[in-house]
Image (cartoon, rainbow, N blue to C red; front, top):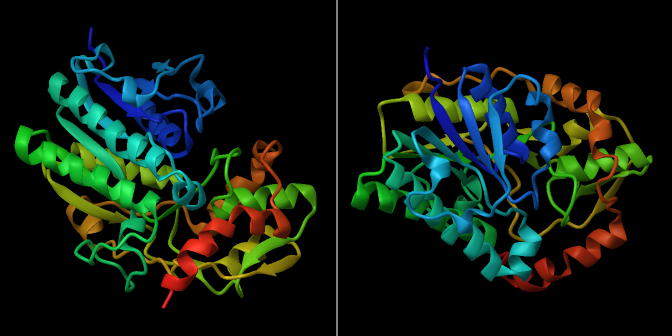
Length: 334
């Protein structure tokens, strides 16, 4: 009898984490998920209930201990757990540092104790701030808000465990992931969640600025495939930028979704363009994008009812939610 290899996915009931679970199950892994279900949903794993070898532990990663049984005999660890979004990180920076930095340290220690073959950390391109494009891995680090800082400090912790404790680690700096199962609750955040609820409600899309700003959107299943390659490679201690390498404008997204538009003020500290230089990940790992932007948006539209219970954001509520953002960052946007 052949024993399945074991993988741990932190945040595995969340957006990208649940797509990671899909990829691993398709490769015949036994998957252990840890998720506190603040941002994740058990629904995201429900399609594996009748056949997939998936177990879920509803815990916070900060509760992990050395020699934690969740990590016993694990081959790989994929670390997605944490908290996102810009606005709440500006208002509650200590919680972000706790979850995204100290939480990562708990994951690193559990992985080290278990002697895993590789840990792949989900970093963020927000560490680059207002970056030159296309952005390479050696671009200067200049996070504009606490979320970006916390994700970068988690990355630094991962590399510290790699250097000091010989924990095999690779890091992927995700640019703009999108896809099915993205967050439907909580703070004002990513453009897809906002627009999808507006579409369902028959409301105009709240386009920031003139909509010509572009983002390097990549479908979540393509993100997950990259993470598996980063685990399987013999390379370690590497940073990889991950995007499609083909930025799409917000106006193009609106065109694909179809609907009216209302423009709201451009926000300080946000880049006009995000654009990953993906030379390293395509060259070293052989990764390639599979899902085009048009196909990905189509898949989302086929599943748009998933966002039916998401909060509806309109210009006045967005203005209230982003007031602190404007107050604190506007005078720095020179």
